Amino acid sequence: FNNKKFKLGVILESITDPNNVGAIYRSARAFGIEFIISTIKNSANETASLLNTACGAFESIDSFKVNNISNAVKKFKKNNWWVVGLDHRASHNVNDIIGKISKNEKYIFIFGSEGKGIKRLTRESCNVISSIPNLPNTNSINVSNAAAIVFYEIYKRQLDISVEATRWILPVQ
Image 1 (cartoon, helix red, strand yellow):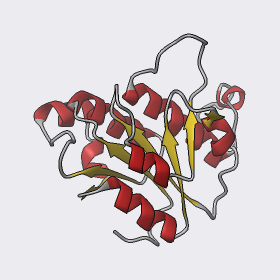
Image 2 (cartoon, helix red, strand yellow):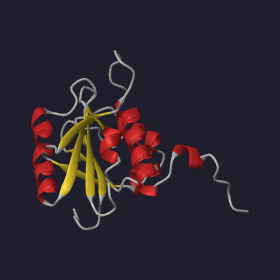
Image 3 (tube, one colour):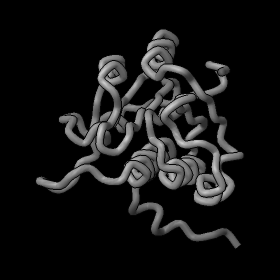
């Protein structure tokens, strides 16, 4: 892993559904995520289903496998990465975190398995745990949908544009 090459990445912890992982890769590619890390065990294998869902994105994003997510997070933090865990029960709004992203800082966002979320040791290693705001009394949303929302918000921040501005951009002829 070349720490100086990257500024924006994702960790997938214990996400085993190949369709979810493929969809995350596809969204990551669409919105400029540079790399994805998953564990050697308890993660989706590279299957036809994953590759089909990813629609070519799997091959275009740097992927890394690690033995232990918590240890990887500690190494990232040691190298001045800002680590943001996602959990639907968290009180911090992920948009507030994304709104503070600067071009010189390095960020990594962690998504956990559906049902269990990110593990306790991983949570404790994060700089902050945040959530995607949604209607009261609703459960979490699908992990690939959550990832797509976060990736899009990061993309908007990086381009410093708003949703309204994107509606008025016309193709150059």
